[in-house]
Length: 304
Image (cartoon, rainbow, N blue to C red):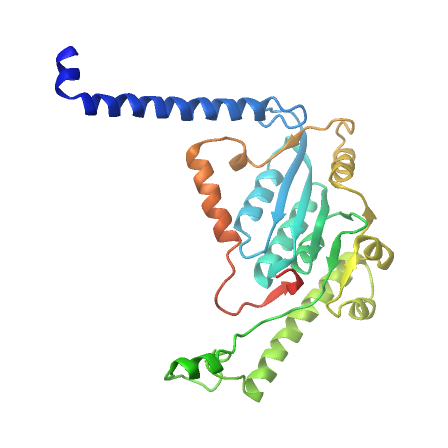
C-alpha cells in the first residue's frame, strides 16, 4: 500500500475523493428518506389504509404519469379514496380528455375528490369533471370553457430574411396553418368546424357531469374565467374548500379517520435516489414543454 501510494499519489487521491463523494450522496439520500418516512401525516412506506394524492400541475401536454398514478391507486386496496390536486391552466385536448376519462373510471371504483388550488381552468376543469366532488377556493381561477388553436404567421419575418418554402401536397388542405402565409378561407372554415366539434364535446361532458342543460352550459362557455365562488353559484363546481378540506372529505367518503388521515403518494414519488431525481427532472421538462407545432387546446392562454 505504501508503495502504491508513493507511485500513484494522484490515482490514490481520486479513489479517496470518489469514495467520499458516494458516501456523501448516500448520507443525503438516507437523510431525505428518513425525513420523508417520519412525516406525521404521510407515512409513504406504510401498508395502512389512506387517501391517495394525485397531482395535475402545469400545462397539460402529456397524460401518461397521471393515468399511471390513477391506475395504481385504483388497484391498491389500501387506497380508499383519492384527492386530485389541480394547479393547471389546461392544455392539449387529447391529454385532458384521457385524464377526465381515467378519473371517471376510477371514481366508479372508489371516491375521487378534485381540489383546485390557484387555478383549474379549461382542460384542468375538464379533468375535474370525472371526480365525485369538485372543490375550489373562493378566488381559484376556473372556467375558461372553450377550445383554441394557434398558428404562427411569420410571413413578414420570412420576407425580411429572404426565406421561401416550396410545398408539394396531396390535397389543398394538407398544409393548413403553414407559417409562411395566412390561412385561406377554406382552411379557416375547416378549422372552425373542428373547433366547434371539440367544443360541443366539452359542453356535452360538462352538462352530463354537472347535471345541467346544455343550453345553460353554452351560456357560460364563452371562454371567460370564473372565480371559485362564482363557479359554485353557477353549478360548475360543488363547494368551496382548500386542500385540507378535500382530504377530510375524501377520508370521510373512504370511511377513514378524518382527524389525521394517512396520505399515500404514487410509488414513483416515494423513494429518493439520484437517478429518480434526475428522471423526474427530465420528465418535468417534457411535461411542461410547449410544442412548437399548433395544438388543439382546452387552455386558458391568459397565463402566458
